[in-house]
Image 1: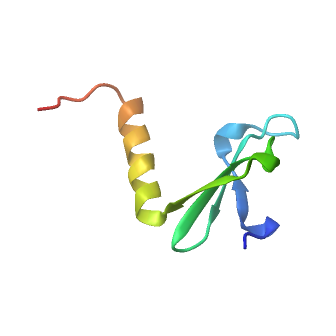
Image 2 (image 1 turned 90 degrees about the horizontal axis):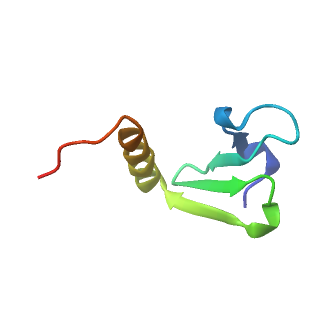
Length: 69
C-alpha cells in the first residue's frame, strides 16, 4: 500500500494547490506515478529498472534527435 508520505511532487509541477499534477512514489522495487489532480484515475506502476529506462528515454528525446542505425 502507498501511504501519503510516499508521494513526492515533481519539481516541474510548480507550486500552489492548482499547479501540481505529477507525483511519484518510490516503493523500492517499483515506482508509482499519479496525477494529483485526478487521484480517482489511479496510478501507473513500473519496476524500478523500467522506470529508469523510461526517464533516460525521455531525457534523450528532450536533448534532440539521435543518429539511429
